[in-house]
Image (cartoon, rainbow over the protein chains, first blue to last red):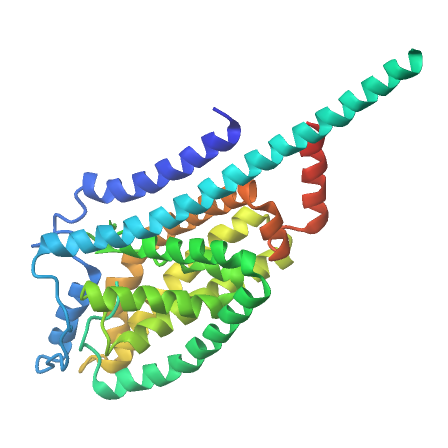
Length: 122
Length: 233
């Protein structure tokens, strides 16, 4: 593995560790419902501060279940990841194509020069 | 995590909408100009938007025992300057408000202000400042993404504290309350976002030297040296 790849893998591992540690250390155990969304907690805090507050608008469309919601979130992540992968794949392909073209160019003039020198000798 | 639908009083919701609108309009103009003058950057623009899409779909657990998600706006702010991110961030927020019931249409103005305006600008400011003092590219990228992420949620906390001051301890009391929910949760996530942004920037440096040089992220003579090296090899 090249040094570059090693650093990239290490970066990913640290991100994974940061995500797993709170779960592994049970940092949500003091809560009734561990690892809920911070937006939901904010809603609770709002109703604590202002018990009479009623949200005056509700979402036009609400995913009917947690499963559908997580499906839509995965769709969002998949769309983004797909575009990113397309970008990096395209770039890699282009670079390879350019390198091959360069190699061909550098080979053919060399071959031409060799022919010339043999022609001179003859 | 953004402010949920209907959870800002109408006056606040309208005010944040008015505050955000000019930034988004200006952003649309800079985005169309960028695409018209440099059609080749469309791909990288798409990739920057895609990065925001991925990161804001990743709900991650945090030290506070709750979950939140990064924003992914730092990368695009560094590459294309913050106005462009006002548009890309708004698109992401709209997608989530319309399809996922995450965030909301009435709170869109406030959420755009925190995630698509303040975050990118704060991250970009940190990036420029660090680069001016000769800090290495990847270190500057890390802190830019970290600040873009964390400042977004500090603004969210301020927005909620303004709308819902604590009856006893007032604005500051409420700020402490919302800050501990949003900002503290966000600290390890901001670190993750910084690391992921560095990762993508490293891949970009490998794959898109010419593009990064044109955008001023890499310096031109360094790129020339890189190319001669490649040719020599």
